[in-house]
Figure (cartoon, rainbow, N blue to C red):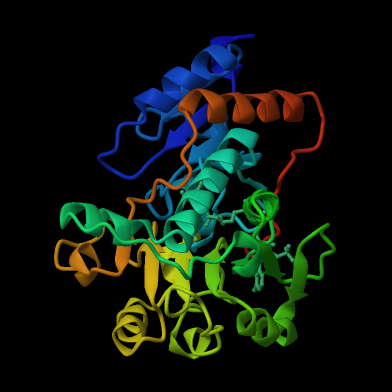
Length: 322
Ligand code: NDP
Ligand code: OXD
């Protein structure tokens, strides 16, 4: 093919971020394409695909012949929040077993951390205190509730159930999952929260879910947990949580503890109280991160398939926003 006719795949990152790693991962897998950074893609008519993570707003509107845009993650809120994103453009998100397993590792780690009161024993070791907790229940007597029963939520739910936890999940549409109690929609939220001692949020950020993790919701959680109150674990998105409400809930005992991987503002500002709150564990939005090689293979396979006339997979429902 003539050099001037080759399609371009653009890697679009925030201004100042280096797209080099992604370009290097994609190039060998897409030998028939020019894989370029946003700045280098001056021949805009040749751009057929964009691979994006938090791209500059409006940057994709200048490509008249775009066929699809690929999110570099599972979440697509960073794309849908661009008002200039072409309306009919298919958006593909990452669905990959490696990413999913990593999320489940993180969820199990933090559920276990709270269930087994690991922070208490770390403190006891520091203070040279030898004391066990005679009231430690078995996993089967601990009720975990997962908000979001999608790719991530289902895998975490199954793995927690395999460890013996009493697991339930909540989703937008009804689901039947072996060994997991399921709830859905507005009507299902109250009963779901009422039986939940450890709440895990794996929801996408949409107009319907923004700010859902607030005082009103925390008040509905089960209060009979052996750790002294409900626990919140959020790896969905920071926009799901009202951070002032989390701090109030911790102070008032509506929440006993929280593990947060995502925040309203990232990186978490130095002034945030979460950094030093004794009942909060902070991780730096790394609950699940796949290697560029894995994600690049997923995207390149889809681009090649689309060029062969096959349908794209994991296309986002623009109305549902995820
Ligand atoms: P999916 O799209 O597979 O699943 C989303 C789930 O949320 C579905 O079960 C869906 O319900 C449910 N849901 C959506 N809207 C609502 C609503 N209004 N009420 C109730 N349930 C709702 O997404 P994934 O599981 O792949 O990923 C989930 C999120 O995890 C991502 O969007 C991203 O924000 C976050 N993430 C975070 C990472 C991190 O490192 N912190 C890494 C990867 C992802 P239904 O089943 O009915 O459609
Ligand atoms: C994702 C993320 O959405 O890393 O994949 O947050």
